[in-house]
Image (cartoon, rainbow, N blue to C red; front, side):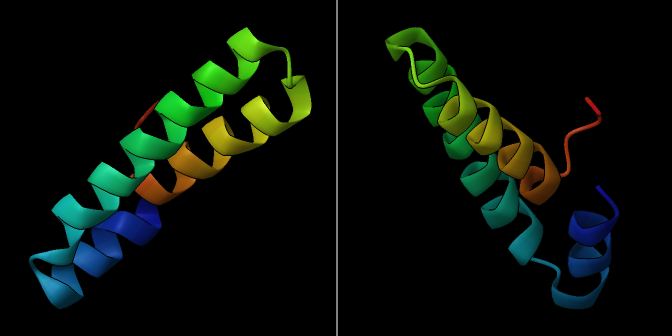
Length: 57
């Protein structure tokens, strides 16, 4: 969350791009969980939350 906010202050337009990448990673993580790859799915969700700056964790 803090990284995305810092980049938003520094680069202005990069925050929406980071949010989109974060959402894509979270969706891929959920799909990975459904398909049975637990560690990979959880890893993608965590990375997506960190990159996207979502207020979940």
